[in-house]
Structures are given as C-alpha cells and as structure tokens.
Length: 127
Image (cartoon, rainbow, N blue to C red):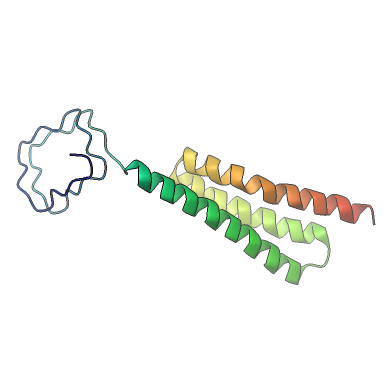
C-alpha cells in the first residue's frame, strides 16, 4: 500500500493497523470508522531527501543573500556579521517550528557561515 492512490474510494471500517501507508493518497476517500493504529505514515524516503537537499540549498542561498545585503549596507565587519546572525537566527526560529531534525540540519549547514563571519572579524581586528 506504500505510495498508492486511494483517492475517492469508500474505505469505511477499513483496518490499516500496522500498515505502511507512507505517501498513500487518501484525498476525498471515505474513512469513517477506519483504524490507523500503529500505521507508518508520512512522506516517502525519497521526498525526505529532496526536502533535505532543498533546505540545505535555501540555507546557503539565504546566507549569500545576507552577506550581499550586509556588505552593501555596512562597511565594518561587525555590522556585516550582525546582520547575518540576525537573519540566520530568524531562519532557525522558523525551522525549529517544523521540527528538531529540520532545525538541526539547518543549524549544521549554517555553521560555515558563522565560521566565515568569525574569520572576517578576526582579520579586521588585526588591521
């Protein structure tokens, strides 16, 4: 039943206990009295990978956008990094609402941006 389409079918009193229904389309189906106890539900694994890669790319894109905007606005590196940190923290607040795994993935992928800001602060402090 994994990934099948049951769209618009009459599934009254159906027993899906313990079934793997990930990716199954139940839209407009009659599910009155159906049991889904211990059923495996959610996205299929290939969609999880696609969403993970998309989240990683969007995090990198937001970092580049933040760098570009703050480089235009600020001439010192402190203001530059402050804008990047504020944008990343805002992104993380939205990510943590989606779940801890999404937040953790976004946080780890953003560590390189934090490291770049730390290096730029170190370089500017010696000049």
